[in-house]
Every structure is written in C-alpha cells, then in structure tokens.
Image 1: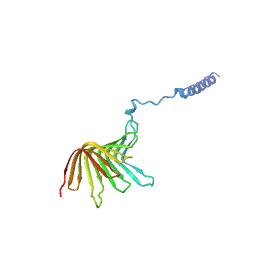
Image 2: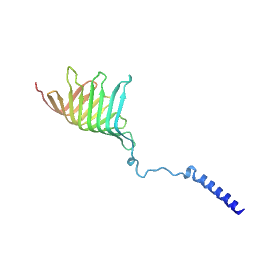
Image 3: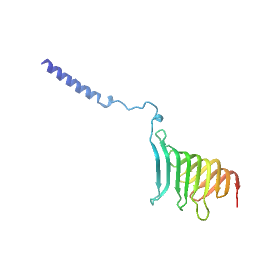
Image 4: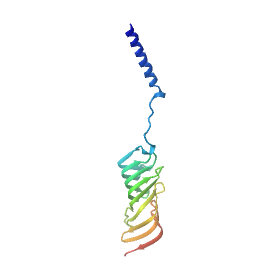
Length: 185
C-alpha cells in the first residue's frame, strides 16, 4: 500500500512540476549573446534583383557577387556591383564598381572603386564611358552624381573634371568644375 501511495505522489509531483515549468512565465527567453548588430543578417551570393515597370518590362537589374544585410536593417552592402538600367526611350546604361551600398529605403545606391558608367552605343552618337572612384545612383530619378574626379571617354575624345551630374533618362551629362578636354580629329 505504501508503494502505491508513493507512486501516486510521484506522478502528481511530476504533473504539477511539468505544468509549472511549461507556463509562459517560466519558458526560457531567446536572447542573443551580443548586440543586434553582431548577429548575422541575410546574405546572398551571385544575386540578381530586377525591378519591372507597369508593363512588366525590366527597368533596373542589380547584380552582385555578394549582398549582405547590414545590422538587420534595410541597408545592404554589395560586392562586385553591376547595375543595368533600361531608360524608357530604349537607352541602356551599365554601372559597375568594386563595392556598393544600398541606403535605407532602397532608392539610392552608392558605388565605389573602379566605377564605370557606360551607355549603349547608338548608330548616330556612339557610346560615352564615365570613369571615377565613386558614384551615387538615385534610382527613381535616374540621376547619377559624384563629387570626385571624373574622366569621360567618347571615342578618341576625353573630358576630365571634378563632380558630375548625369540624367540617364534624358541622356545629359554635366561636369561640375575643373573641366579639361582633349578632342582628336
């Protein structure tokens, strides 16, 4: 009889302790060992992101060998960046650089290191190539800007300057200061 009482008390104690320990107040909390910035976010290798217009045609294609989320936020670091832009009038632009950064909101892309911006050649005008060390690309406005030194190559002709504003939709380029050109005919 004593054995049965002991067994019943043990089962009751097990049931009560299981009920108490499984209550929400006693569940272990999931905490990180470090600050939020030290935790890994997402990363993508050989990533391609494409934005489409209302008609379903691609307008922007962002490619990178690696994309890393910064501090679980909306900023993204890019390695070996390639941005392809299809203007509404059919002009294609390609922007390449060693590294990039997508700012919060995803509308501004900063590209640095061996930056090259090139428009597709047309039968009438040829292709312009812009070389610099850093560019900022405002995606919704299709504007590219820099305050750095810039070299523009257009066939055999070259223009050098400091600072650039380029409107990719309208196919306009403006050098800001210290403009120096060489035209060979």
